[in-house]
Length: 154
Image (tube, rainbow, N blue to C red; front, side, top):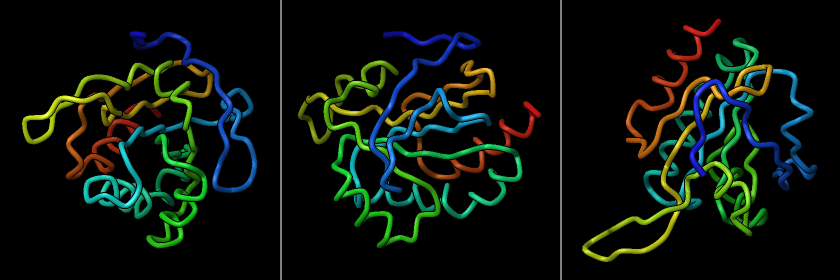
């Protein structure tokens, strides 16, 4: 599925590390969703820690940050606790939301080709419209870049 800027973001519900089901339709603020391949791997850890460090500034921008991967809630809870991540992680073990957002695809690593999550980030405004998309994200300084873009939207 190809998502377009200024179109409605796909609705979804996923289990969250806070013990509830995250329902995007119930959120009344801006949302930053970052999709990442795997808990406790170097790039994903760095990206999550960077978003976590800036979480209070995101909150001041009336924005909720959530991370989504296909890892289990148990894995997410351990990952979140280990690195003191200040926001919720959502589990999409069935790849439903990952595919809805078009972030499941062909990847290659060390000459091997496989299917996996393409590291991507979306900013969704209060009207549930996608206002910014990053695909094939480079982790270094990405959270800062997202925050900079978010501030331009205000």
